[in-house]
Image (cartoon, rainbow, N blue to C red; front, side, top):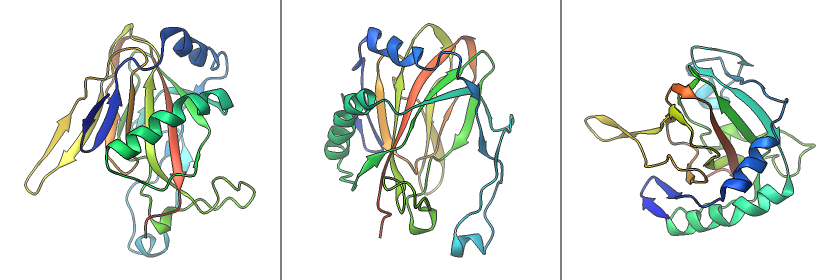
Length: 210
């Protein structure tokens, strides 16, 4: 395990066989990834919450995704989230995890700079039929690297200071490694240049910050 103020990661925490088992859940269910195509935020949306427009946008993201809610995966990753949440000093109020995303990046695939969530009161889920997500927001994100036989595809953070910003690239390239970070942090997956990169992505939710 290794702590940097903005993120927390474990090297080769999940064994290769388990990674392959998770990867196999995608099987033939991969579909082109969707993103929020609506860029920018209006003054009105800053007061009432941002509207979204879900669809494909190959200028923002090219990858394929499959989804899983397997309880054994939740049981596997939950303790890593708890430890990171405590050891990193975030101590966020976490109540559940969303359906998890198995992501496939083929050569040329990428996901540009983005944030997974804002965690404020204007970005809560309005899902009355889902007691786990309704009224909640994304607070922590987790990515698990499921394979290593590819090139490119670096996981990168953008961090800011008063006068400039910099791109940080964690040592996150070994099979089974886990990285946990606040969902409001800006990050990207650089283009894959050779092979195929597989990962599991999970978002942990809780009540909005107040």
